[in-house]
Length: 257
Image (cartoon, rainbow, N blue to C red; front, side, top):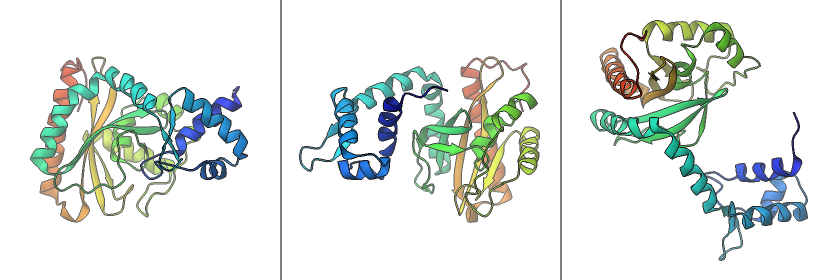
């Protein structure tokens, strides 16, 4: 695959910024990119001219520009799913007091596209726009459990089962068995597989063609979950997911658990 080096470097600079690194000096960017300051300066000035990077006049540090916010909103407006699901996320969060997420799949990862925090919010990892592994998350499992064997084979080809916690599934055979259980049960769980002390329950959301287009999850402290609470959580999630699926055009005669 042909890679344009200057474009790749510019995009890598943008990827350096997140909620922890919101502003950086040119020397910091140069060190992280392992590039000479003059090269980084040229890239930054190009990005700055186009509005993707701006410079804080008070300290001279660089930060993401408003053009990214504008472009991001174009994508968000295209996501009717997010608009439809929002009221159900809020309803679930208010009813349960827990954090509720909406996630879609992008290749071999999930992406948080919405999140509503309840008063008992527990999850540190999640953030809208952040990516999450498929193998260690409840949402990831729900996103791919109903794929065909060929689709699964393609998704999991060269997949890296990175161990997030001691509970993470790192073996493909075990992971495929886990996905079979998800198909049978109609919901998925990660039991402290992605974040210590946190158990997450997720269900799939279907579109008009009967395809899973997203997953919705609820996260709770592991110590607070018993069988009765788990059953209530699953029922609430399934009910909300079915309502969203119907608004996306899902027909009842299509196979869905």
